[in-house]
Length: 85
Length: 330
Ligand code: SF4
Image (cartoon, rainbow over all chains, first blue to last red; front, side, top):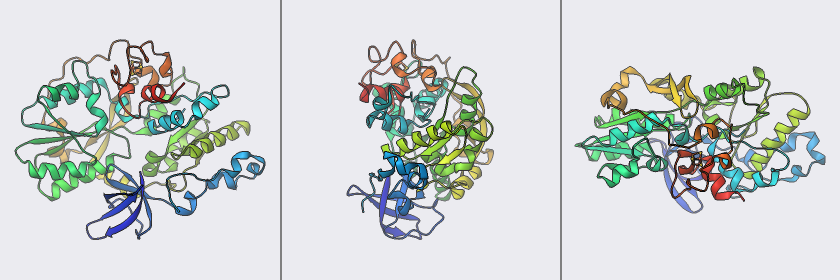
């Protein structure tokens, strides 16, 4: 489940993430990169396992990169997932 | 073949499966951790639940899985303590509060779950909590992929790889599918559009007569995965040969706690006697997990076996192929 970071405790290695209006405390020792407010984390079993690249999340970039997709209807498919603007 | 139970559910729920019925066949594989847990491990868990002063701590789906003679649900009705936790971290905190009870966390899952379990042991160590232990029946995905690829009866044209497992392992861990077996593979996220993208990229590779392991989940998966998570897995666990439901013994496909952590290893601390394990009569979960049968081809599907009266784990787990087909197919 991905969620947006709304509170961070760097020392104790946890963050509060919000998903569909519900807030959850998740542990962050597995995340190497810096975490800032507004980041999106993917969580599994109470631990963040990765930071979501928001640029990539807003479109299925692989499809767009593919030249053949210019004639393909899938080309216009935008990411319609859980990540709010 | 999709090798993730969540993909199976998304494929069924979104209508992709029905949409593509006449064009291509999507088979689900060994991607549900509860479903691939061997019957003997389910029976071992039930024996552990029968020990006095014991609380079995688990993620939800394990509770209803039938073993040979009982299930955790039945044991709970008979007085055993079974508690569901969202995270192993919560179970450690709970163990700290109930020091007169043995808390055994069921380490069921793939590469994605193992770091969380390893960190819970680190926490128990740090807080000197002695009554917390883990029964590790973790499974590793690359070895089961090799088992599928080496099966002469299976002819799989391409693989949709599990996005969250790959978040930990990295894309490169699955390069062998294309480089050694010449089968296309695409790592996919969990939106219907991710699945469609993966199918498109697989078909494109087939048309172009080439095979690559492509990362279609670049917003989360990197070439080498999550290095910290891999380090913590390596610190606490070592690979062992493990039994999988439907596959038998697969070399180096499980994770056991290293000997230095045997104080936290429920298998070492509580050696229970497990009666002979037999899979549920008539259940085809083994074939479904190997992609040899679709759930609908099991004679018990939707008649004797339903989500409210499940015969096998594939109908119990929310990620199980039989439950997904039952709940969402026409
Ligand atoms: S339908 Fe039930 S009995 Fe048949 S394979 Fe699925 S879980 Fe097993």
